[in-house]
Image (cartoon, rainbow over all chains, first blue to last red; front, side, top):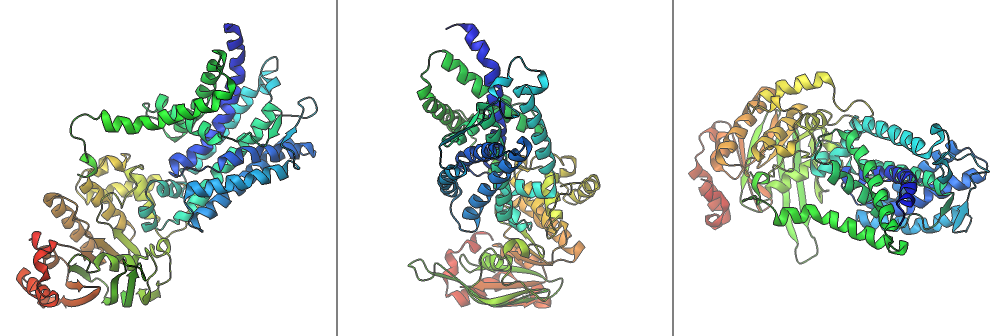
Length: 309
Length: 265
């Protein structure tokens, strides 16, 4: 238990946290803005990486590869959106169906192999495990990922301020009211799901580069990590009054906190096989807090209260 | 302005819970008509409004708004012609969004929503002016989340949103029923002022017979999915609650004694 091992692992954890932060911003769009729990992301968190790695192996530039990863993610979101809106399947189930189907598709993309690697020596990667220390700052993975987050947050901040973005937010807040105001709520849900999964796939493309390979299991449990980031961000920074851009940044920070804590428990000697169990429990506890607070720690007679006034 | 003919709707058809909610509704509104609708529970009042709004497809009949056949249009497309206020104050506004954002959403009813700014500076000034009509001080709280407002304030805001862009028909579904009497009177008063100012064609459902008589230029009574009484002009002005009760007793065979209509008088 050398403290130096922990400190040495921190920058890497930061970079990973930031990449998952991008993914968590995607989850935020469905979970918080649209009020849908979208499980498609467990599939798209692999699709993006698979598309990106395979395209790079076929000689495409990293930019084009990432763009295609983004588009592939949007396509997955579109499928879930159609399952949910046009076919009336509950959102959770629609996501699970797409995710399951994506497993086969991901294997196809990776030419039937469960794992495809790109070597950092042969390819011009944007981010990598190796670009953490001893590289100029503009090549540092933490810096590069920060730029990505900055651009994504700026674009989303703009988008959700437009007429269409407001319509999507209204759909998540109150569907009845949205339809009464002439908003096509089905279309809004589909656009939201596409945007969310596109961002997740982009994060997946970056993550695959970072770890040097795409793996068919890399998305397993992604939704839980995404939710953990959203909830941790909310618990830590929720008290601060900030605008929408601040909320998105707090989600990314939540992901970093998640990865730093993960590093610490691993350093403390937790078996890495038990990590998923730990993640699930942590998210369950944080999800339960608002409910339990309302149930057992409410002061005075608040039952109904303002809501029924 | 609005022409409903032969509208029928049965819920859960073919099951043990089958309920014929509308059994051939006929109603024609002229421009500027303000119709109040009364009737017992299950008479089909709200169902008629939902049929007009397109919440679900109707089984038979047709609905024309301003000579446009809207019978098959989905709810969100029909919204361009309609302003709606619901019974539940929670239903008409987006709680997580600001007052000004809610108004901005409403002002784009029926318009294409693209990538232009969701709210502009000029709009805000206009909203301030409009909010003053309500007399609730909301014009000072444009950036407050709607979830922080009381039920009465939310209902008043919904009313303003429904009429911000002049609707062909304004549908009010017992919009004061969930409010305390004092607030209800305020919202009704605001309704009268707005309807009169813009000369809006309006359908207002109410459980309160006094309100039904006091407001509007026309009154219809529904019973078992049909309109059974339609009165306007001088005759409506001279109506008394006792007249309505008598009429109601006549068609329902005395059932009205248990009805909620009695309690609200």
